[in-house]
Length: 322
Image (cartoon, rainbow, N blue to C red; front, side, top):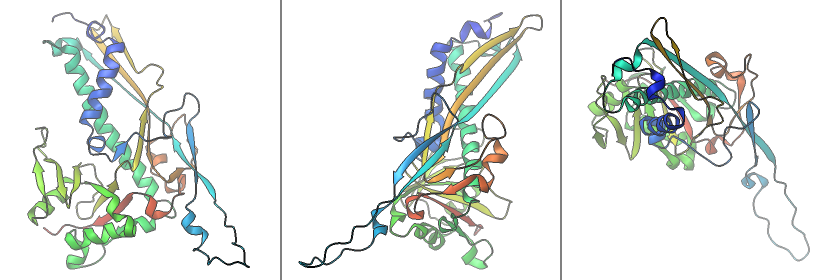
């Protein structure tokens, strides 16, 4: 396809939904249900945050009273609070000489879209890790954290006993933890301990990492961006839809441009999205239009508002057995 320009093969009205669909398919955190569309979380048409009021749990209003024909019941109160999610605006531009020529074939737009979708899926996972780092650095998240890395021997490593201990951080709500997000070294360590239920072949990418391994029926998402210093690893356990996800209302999601004199094609992608750990309120103020990586990773910008057991995320810090 000599001389073909990006604008010849990229039609935004067709390209945008294609990328959205492919990103959803390629996203590991969305495919396994960790991040999901939930009621009340959507990108607003105006404003930088969305507020989600909720009623506090009646379980905290006291026990049943004994009925009496002379003593009336004492009315309890139901409290109210609000969760707050922040809109994240992100974008990326790519430039290459006669870019479209590199994608000559039966479906050049599909070839470009697949690469963009894969890129955006990986960026979403990096964004989630920054959000979790900040959220778990906030006051009140100790109840959802198990750090055994300073212990010795088998007490410091990930194994069947310590995983159960991590799950138990949520008490009777631990059964709601259905997914595990971890580093590939952790997954291989669990495999070496013969702890995995099954291994489903991955996408055949360059890392050749098996995906959607499961442990105790909990699907494992493998990402080498998961926190580690080479000795200590951070694994997150999630419940379904623990992360509220939404995207939309981006003024110009896709644009193309060209420097004709240089023969350079430019593809521009923009995205407005929400990835919110439900029950952990964003209370920060971004220096720019939207929070950057450092601001998302700052604990004072987050605050727990749900009961710890209602936050379907546990942070598990450990070492490897192998």
